Amino acid sequence: MPSPRRRPDPAPLSALTLLALEDIAGAAIVLDAELRVVDFTPSAEQLVGAPLSRGTFAAKALCGEGDQRPIAEALAAGQAVAAEVTRVHPEGGTRVLHVRGTPLRRAGVTLGFVLLLEESGWERGGPDAPVERFSILTADRGMKQLLRDIERVARRSATVLVRGETGTGKELVAQAIHAASARSGGPFRAINCAALPPHLLESELFGHARGAFTGAVRDAPGHFRLASGGTLFLDEVAELSLELQAKLLRVLQERVVIPVGGRDSIPVDVRVVSATHRSLQGAVAEGSFRADLMYRLRVVPLFIPPLRERGDDVLHIAQRFIAEQNALDERQVLSISSGARARLRAHPFPGNVRELQNVIEYAFTMGDGPVLLESDLPPELREAPAPDGDRQRAQVNVPRSVPGKAAPREDNEAARIRFALERSAGHRGRAAQSLGISRATLWRRMRALGLAE
Ligand SMILES: Nc1ncnc2c1ncn2[C@@H]1O[C@H](COP(=O)(O)OP(=O)(O)OP(=O)(O)O)[C@@H](O)[C@H]1O
Ligand SMILES: [Mg+2]
Image 1 (cartoon, rainbow, N blue to C red):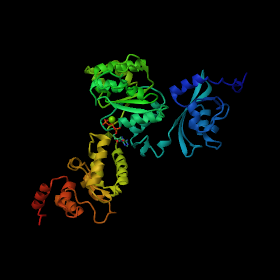
Image 2: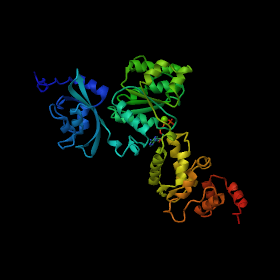
Image 3: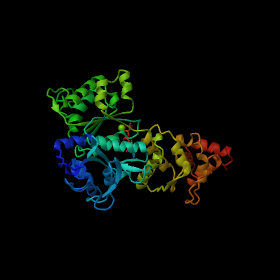
């Protein structure tokens, strides 16, 4: 009886098959039953960071020659495996690869294995550690999944629709998709579909011919052509007029544009990422958006959760904005008081990350000293009902590193006013400003509390 070891060597896959495999599954390595490399997709070699060659053993290709062979051992035992493998990259630094391996079986016989590779270098530090990719900072697990999805969609050219409340980072995500894609060397152009009346928007998008309308003194290419070879970001796409929706649909289907007042169709090579803060499905239901265009635009839908649902992200991103302010200003904030933290955690942030950026800038400007205090925050955060259970912590954990600057009890108005006056060196205007009240109100409260001389 022929031994299974005598099986003829599997035939290498065609270049086209490998490309198809990469398109469906990402970077992949195909192994024979003895764990030798049969073939690999182009980006697998790039991820491993060393030349792969047919016939070498997988464990060696992935783990060097050490005795660390968890993948090889699991596969040899016929099990599916998921493991992290650290590779020292020739261009410097280490990379963590996420490797999933699955046996390929037919009629009970293991014919070989497939390994799927994904870079997870940025995930070091545990599932709740903050990470940063493409300027997107987050510690939230849902957002980390979004970062992985971005890398996945970036590899293909599918049309992506990003949905999220205002200020959640929709444009940042569109830029990330561009930066992670093969088009990153090409242009990234963004256009806000809600910002212009339809006739202007049409020529902004598709261009116009000279003389097409009054003021069209020369040909203009339009964003589709200007983004050629790159990515076009259509912001607030739900606001497009029905007439422009029909035109956009034709461009997406036929991949050509006809400039306003022009006759010839011009081919365009653009990846479209669009964004909306409201549901396109809802817009379709109310008759303001074409269903066929919606399906074209949301081949891959990505959702950005609001900041208030991302746990500690508000504090991590606040630290980032503080560091940015520190670099610009004389004031150097080294920490956030526990009272201010509690307020930041409790605020719903309807304007999301952009609102947080403004809040930090406000607090930075209004306060001084190395600790960002609750009293530095804008009134809408300070004057909200005290966050549950945080009040006590806010009083206990006042940083002790700042002599003479300890925050007062928040429920003691007189102390707050005295504190504000002390910090503003008796300057009532500045004290009132930092308390978020007018000078007149400050004066009235000082008299009522017996603080005025
Ligand atoms: N996770 C994040 N980490 C760091 N900065 C962020 C993050 N998310 C958003 N930002 C910053 O917040 C601001 C708002 O982001 P962006 O403009 O992408 O939001 P948007 O959803 O497009 O907003 P809008 O709906 O108002 O158009 C930008 O300055 C962006 O750099
Ligand atoms: Mg935007």
